[in-house]
Length: 88
Ligand SMILES: [Zn+2]
Image (cartoon, rainbow, N blue to C red; front, side):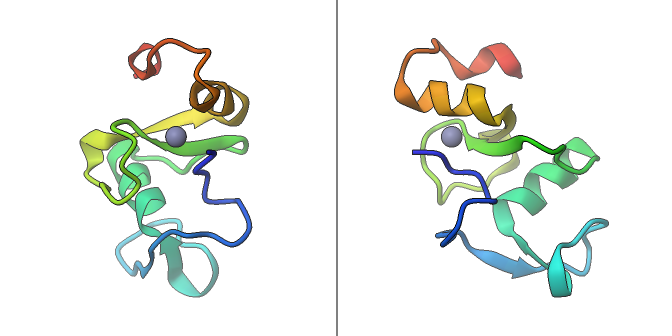
């Protein structure tokens, strides 16, 4: 399943992030987006989603998050693209 933050009906934990340089509306941001953007030192680009490397969407450790192009991410979850590591 796609786990991008732009999907409707987000299941993700949204946090108030006054420490984040690019908060979304009202200073709120999905936690995995916040963690990854702080790790990368940049904002996610259009078309990028946050992928949880170990498949555990509750594991928002920086080492478990990687940016992926939406289409590539979808293919990854369908199971046709070998491994996540190629994009790290
Ligand atoms: Zn994913």
